Amino acid sequence: MPIATPEVYNEMLDRAKAGKFAYPAINVTSSQTLHAALRGFAEAESDGIIQISTGGAEFLGGQHNKDMVTGAVALAEFAHIVAAKYDITVALHTDHCPKDKLDGYVRPLLDISAERVKAGRNPLFQSHMWDGSAETLADNLAIGQELLAKAAAAKIILEVEITPTGGEEDGVSHEINDELYTSVDDAIRTAEALGLGEKGRYLLAASFGNVHGVYKPGNVVLRPELLKDLQAGVAEKFGKASPFDFVFHGGSGSTAEEIATALENGVVKMNLDTDTQYAFTRPVADHMFKNYDGVLKVDGEVGKKSTYDPRTWGKLAEAGMATRVVEACAALRSAGTKLK
Image (cartoon, rainbow, N blue to C red):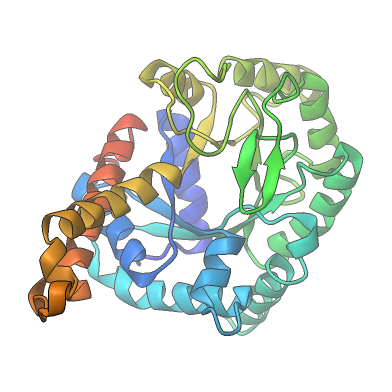
């Protein structure tokens, strides 16, 4: 059962919350990066989450048609087959989807899984993300209610982002400023609209200074202790201890202390994209520079097939990204926690 069933995915998240660890959620854009993520999880003996953004899905759909749904479905079906060879369990997730792409991405994917469930099968994806951070909170939560109901009916968990994460992710961008911090009132309004599990389970991407992409230490002030305040504020009003399952977005450049604080305060999923992209590309660049006259037909020569064969540098890329995934599992305390 390498691809988690709905029941197993819930168990994974419950174990992470109770054990104060989080699953690395690795963005993939190809069968090769999928294998790199799976390999990293397996080497770390960690379960994990594989995710596809709208841009990643469009890329997977091919540059002729750039169809996001086709790309996401194709890789998900591929993952269901190849993941069976890895001794870990993974969940499939779709990353950031803004309002203008819902009809071309998340809603059709929810419909596909709903049909599978009606036929007695498991959903194709285990969770989907609705990124309403560019909308007013009222509009964000109204759409969230609609999507949560559809997701719950298809045995899928919804991820919601209620306030902005700075930087840029697949065309959705926010300034880096003081608005990048979710308030207790924001969290209470979210609980009032989406419930605390009775309407369907959801993951909450709250903002505590997070920024997508690469940033140097000191440029961004992360306040992961804010998550404790959000948990406490909602717990006091609704009487449910530690009510939220948080997601850590924009984690590149975070310190070990910041990550540890986030884990202590309910983070169960942390997204990795920028760092794994670099880890995948860096060995390829090294290979190309070192084998310049082999990968190119320089000065009328014929080059060297064994150096420009995509399998040669592709294996290096897979290994580099897998190593970064192993590091992420260690940092998030998920290493060695795989389901038996």
